[in-house]
Length: 119
Length: 177
Image 1: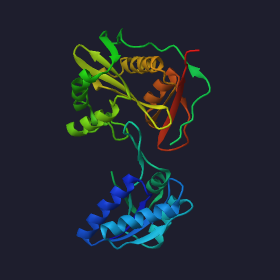
Image 2: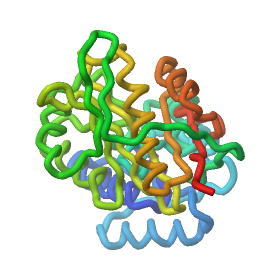
Image 3: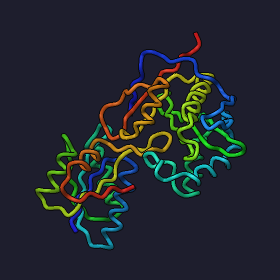
Image 4: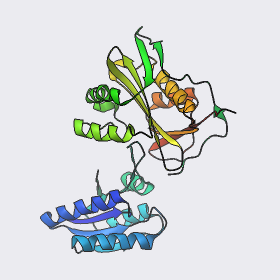
């Protein structure tokens, strides 16, 4: 399968990326990582993601999403014919509630491609 | 996430410990939860109906519940428990965020819902918070959970968040002059 994985640079997202990579190795999936930013620096987020992929020693295409990352992710998944969108971001509140970021909400509501949300 | 708080403060919450009779004529004791309540709370969450989970909590298995209780019962947090006889039947936690405010959540065991315990438990937890000098309290609630939203509004919480899956509500506690 060809997967497009939407991540920011959060710890949750990086843990999710690691999980996707380990499954992709077993299944032979091709991965494009679409990086968006939740904390102020898209370049910084991209560097974090590339570094993590290096550490994992996994070859993936990296794209950056600057404005409206949710809608860009949906468009990319359709125009480039990906089989699945995988999302791994979001935050945990002080008392442990899962909070989705606006990108995750947009993609869940608007994608025509199957979406996997990593918990 | 940055939470906005109402300008007007809310006052008049009762501090624990206290006892109140619920709608089913049960005497419910409300008090600050300490380490000795931990086992009773674990037992309550093991009994919890998955249908009443909110945004991933409480966790479904015992080790998950214990890890989560370690976080919410940290010494910086304020916990209030509702007890009926020897059992914990409700729990409110107030956990500090990074901005000096506190996040609130409440869980009431299924057999004790709809008996006014939730309202009394949140009001008592806010009384404890006031006594301990907290001012800014916030929570998130799923949009479809109308009964919870109505309960929070009756207590004095206002809707302060932007549109998203969860509704954000907050309250400013009155502080001593």
